Amino acid sequence: MVEQNKQVSSGGRISSDERFHYIGFDVFPGKGGDIFKSDSEKANLVEAVLKKRSKGEMLREQCSLLLQRVSGFERTVLAVTSAIILLSLFTPWYSAYNEVVEQPAQTAAMAADQGGSAGEEVITGAVVRKKVHREPASLSGIGSLIAIGSVGGGMFSSGFALILTALVMLVYTLLAIAIPVYVLMALFKKTQENADETALRLKKLLRLGWYPVILFAVALLLSFMGADYGSGVAAGFTSFGSSYGPGVFLGSLSWGMFVALGGFLLLATKGIEI
Image (cartoon, rainbow, N blue to C red; front, side, top):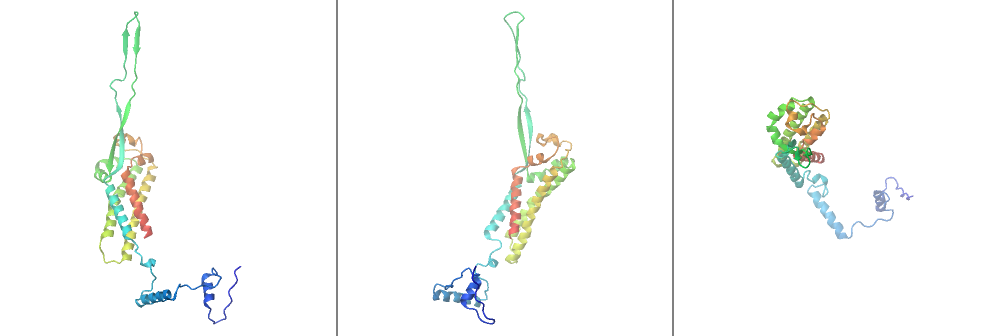
């Protein structure tokens, strides 16, 4: 057990050694040494403190209150992320394919050889397997907005789950345009706000990145409900199968969609840190 410090009489002044024990919580039970290496070092430190107080500066150096809430590097990362989300709109977001069966030139080869002894007939045959190849097709994020008049008709005439999924992904695509644009404007627009007000406004804006993430999760959950296709949808691409489900939903998404999703996650996560 650590020996208890001697009690100081009421109203008395504690000594330097007793203060050292109290501040250190008996971590240094021995006699405390001098904090400064020399008198000149002590004098320089005291002079620096007095000079700082004379200017009205009460905070210590490297105080977290004086650090930038959004550094220049973080601004660059946010700007690049927003630009990538915008550029992803011009990359494939949706993909599908048709399975095309190649018809062989000759499905069976038969030959008869009348030779040798009378009445002898030799028949040979060959079976040719069908060859199937896929013809892929893709649609970009911007292309999906342009093609909503032609593609949307078949989707909105399908089952309830597919209709809701189409609406959810439409909002997702519009947010992929709006959110990056607003973030870029907030990063480079000159305002009369101070650093804290600018950071708080950017924080609220970055939180919007959670909405596309939530919409994507909702669309995935809706796919588990399943739905029947409207007229002509299933015939458009064989990859759609006979009915709509989670396999069709995930299989119809291309890499551009996931690039945008990753960008939204990065923006939203940064909104938590600010």
